[in-house]
Image 1: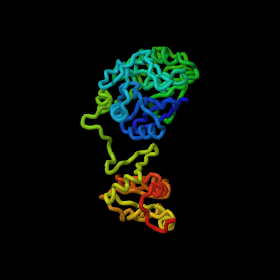
Image 2: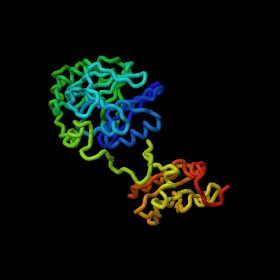
Image 3: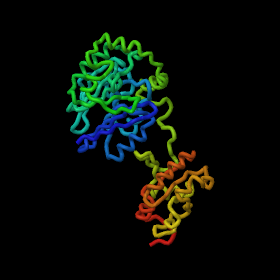
Image 4: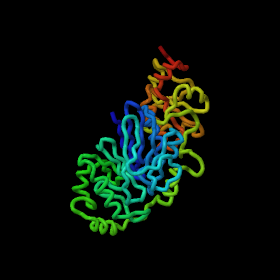
Length: 357
């Protein structure tokens, strides 16, 4: 069975795609975004997947790829077109190449026009394809910079994408209107630049008169992507929480396990966000934990020491997760939720205080 996820970065309107073979657990990521590396690693971890390949459809000009950092953290191989001129890639792809993940594979179709190194990745049964910036939903990528060539793009779409089965689903690298997927049949019929009976001259005239502004991130993104996203200084990610052994979840929550919390000792402040009767009830509470019920947290922020990390605690981890969101919103950066709450804390034999059973 194929595992498939479409992920979105709101800043760059970029889609990242996860494909995995459920039986083997092997996975690939297409067009990952630097700022979303924690999210992507969390999803892989929660689904129990092993990343084998990190693929970009082209050398992006509007965001920085996380390919290099993902390679360092997962040992997966970086793949990109041999025509992209990118350093630090492990696999330089050409038309017709196949990349396997478990019992599945994707094949490479060269689709230049937006850049010389644009490719489209096609799933083995041709039920879906990942078109990068070549073909978008009712549109296409720009051809006015970075080796753009309108006639090459027209040929790429008509010979490599429109020749797929009509019911093949097409997933672009971007969409700025919230659209998520289209099909070969739809684009052949309704794409205002490339569909219907429009010929190369029509397309060239359309593209020549777009008059689009210069991409905002190109001066930053392009040099970084020519190195597969390898940072100049270190391999850190902004806002890294290094004050304890933490885990970042796909839900966007930093969590700490009971053992790590106990080892942190007085370095952290523990805030129990349950109601008072729960705090004093059968489950008890963690020694030195302060009681601030979740519905009072915003009004009692002044009671917290802003020089020490905060760990929020509740019965099972739900309310404490919400507490971390509230605390982050109010400027407290070093914050985590106790994974599994008091239920897990007690089950693992850690000390409790209160009227316990």
